[in-house]
Amino acid sequence: MAETSIGLTRELIAMRVAQEVGPGDAVNLGIGLPTLVADFVPADRGVLFQAENGILGYGGISEGDFDPDLINASGQPVTLPPGASFFDSALSFAMIRGGHIDVAVLGGLQVSERGDLANWFVPERGGGSVGGAMDLAVGAKRLIIAMQHTTRDGASRLVRVCDYPLTAPACVDLIVTNLAVIAVTSDGLLLQELAPGVTVDQVRAATEPDLRIAANLGEMSL
Amino acid sequence: MTATIYDTPDAALADIPDGASIMVGGFVSGGSPSNLILALRRQGAANLTAMANNIGLGDKLDELAESRQLAKVIATFAIRASGGRQSHFEQQYHRKEVELELVPQGTFVERIRAGGAGLGGVLTRTGLGTSMAEGKRTLDVDGETFLLETPLHADFALIKAHRADTLGNLTYRRAGRNFNPVMATAADIVIVEAEEIVLPGELDPERVETPAVFVDRIIRCDPIEVRWDG
Image (cartoon, rainbow over the protein chains, first blue to last red):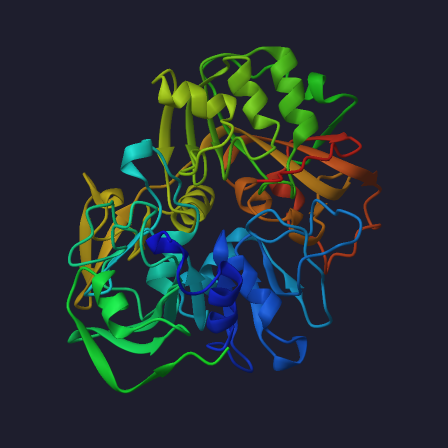
């Protein structure tokens, strides 16, 4: 079995991330895996999802007729529950850069042990786009990275120093992977939860930097 | 000055010259002035600098790359890190046939806002400690370091509104706002395609988002639907 196939599916990673957002939170979900998080947040939890193209309080992915003016930042059609609002890009990024977004969930290519994030440019493919990632990484009150623990080749995405171009330095608060939940602390990475069936040794083997183990280390409840 | 109404998008942008800089509103499928973009393709101006949030995400702007009218693009999303099919712009970018200035989205909109508001620049923390800061000045304000980003201004802006009145007051629809209201402030000549043109008084003044002073030319067009499926 390939190293990357142990632990959680993408959907289960999103389900675990969804536990991190609570009533009243304004939450921005990045492209890719993070967009799945909305599916696991009950509508009655009182979370306001923000899309940088100018919606606060959108619902889930819409199965109805396509409205080109009602999409999230990944271009997916979304629903519009009561209480939503529209605004232009300047106000949207005032929200993001001004510290009004409680939680941002972004994908990651690499996260360093001091919380540097690289998630926008893949050197070996000679490409990538930044979108709103740098603004969200700097401006959100809390930044959660949802990603696979290792690359397809088995290299750790948790690294001592990012060698991919940075999105922002020292910005990540929490990392949720297919193997574990890991907090970024002033003392480095702290292993807090294991995916069901995954051992501390497996996480250590898949993680380049040293990992401290939380005193209350437990299994994710999903 | 108030706006002039044109019969066709082609007539409204006939005078865009080679080498012009052009802001283009829209975010993926939302609020994209596709009628104007396609008219610009028919018009044929070359060596253009386009400023838009994205190119190659189902938008018609990529058709200006296909027709080789773009020399430079300033955008936040243009090159995908993942594989899959490439836009015309991406293919030309990887062959080094077109220039790209990639800008963080918040910085992009604030640079345009500064250009439209007569401000000398933007101080932001976005991009500090990254490649986006290379060659740029930083300033310390009250003990905190900020990156200085310069204003963006264009010769023309192509805007998609929902409704316009004959003076040029504009309203937008849902997330079709995005960059349109800001870009409408930041170009010498602002050209608007609107789904409906009404008489003054028919737009609720409380709802006008772009006041007429910013708008030069209006054309009524049925929207062209664009869609991105990843």
